[in-house]
Image 1: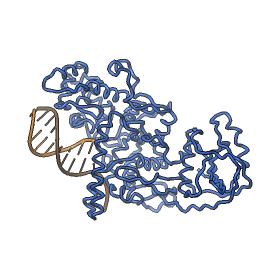
Image 2: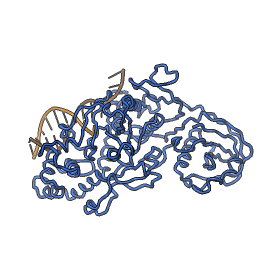
Image 3: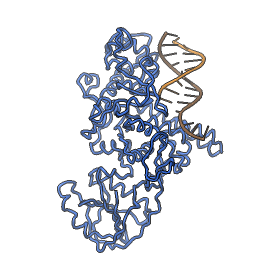
Image 4: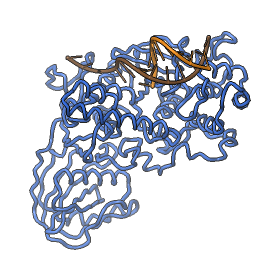
Length: 532
DNA sequence: AACCTGTCGTCCA
DNA sequence: CGACAGGTT
């Protein structure tokens, strides 16, 4: 919900703006807003016909905005939401329930043949899933658009980037629809940006430095301002009936101290302050100040602003509500879009080539009993078994999994190893599953330098992409999405004898020599060469 | 006067 | 998500 009426309250400090103002600069994008709007155009398809082109319309919608920014020489930095915060689970559960209800009605109407009515319900059931975000991420990668998946709230991540110099990966402004960004104290936010680049800009400094004493936020510090937002009601805390943004402002500007405001409220007979309010208030304050964010430089999680002792007295050292800590490797995988931020499991996605796993060799070793997939890179070889009933899709999913594991340098998590000799036989695999994945290039302004560009609207990029099924309340996911990049550029080589191949369990040290022998001897029967 | 609750629109052609 | 309308405190 953001903070109710906060945007209207800040109206005096909001002015029309065009994104070209930020030409030559980096601007953060709250991915959720455009994803959600975009999903509106295809809510029915996302659920009922997820494999059709129409179901991908939200990607086109999003890319239109990206191309708009690029046209004006604005560098987009797309930030996605990550895992749920415990203190937000209440409101989140509520929304989920509503969506589910609408989804049931939608399907009912759909099967009755009432598409119009169904569409309405589908739109109310729209939900952006990690899977959908992941679809977009892959396009962003191909288009070399910078992006980041926040460990938890995208808002907090954007606020952090706002506090950074551009040279250190920071951003000069944020494009969003969510008023929460104001509570985080972000200096420059663009709301309601339309498809031409026009929006409404809030420059927070203008609110704090009007130059006129006694007006608006003159003399208030950021912490009081954030406190005002929480009093007015935010997702992280329970709210007091009868207190909106107006009264919150009056209280804060009158007492200029949050402790005092809270004790005054408790005494005031007009309001009923829940027993737990003070606790939840300070927790919310801690979220706005110290939410867990991902630091690109150190590749690890850290608080938005350094934790100070002043809050500890209220919080009694309990910081679990800032979200559970995760190992840095996982945090990195989430931030870079390889791991689902909620389940913490790898998407079936091949890591970005630039991050490693270049020139990986893919081999399928086939025995009468079982099959083995080996992915080797330089002197490392990673192997996992798969059953003979496996489809090509299964194998690819496995390959992606291995590549993720390689990427994450986590060599202990794979399945069985090859431990005994096996008879190998040549297996023939064909790869007819490629479909063209169309990268939206619907920028009306941009002149693309495309070889042989026929003025068409789409740039075709060959990606093999099968069964892109979405996972959501709106979209039922019957199977994990399976994607793989450019498997069609493989060469089939034949190999002779095979030997036992062991998974290299040394992440460090022995990389140089351990599998050299196996590389030469491994029996392959089919060897694919990946061109990345 | 300010707050609350409920309803509607976000997309697209 | 926000915006808005109309009823309530």
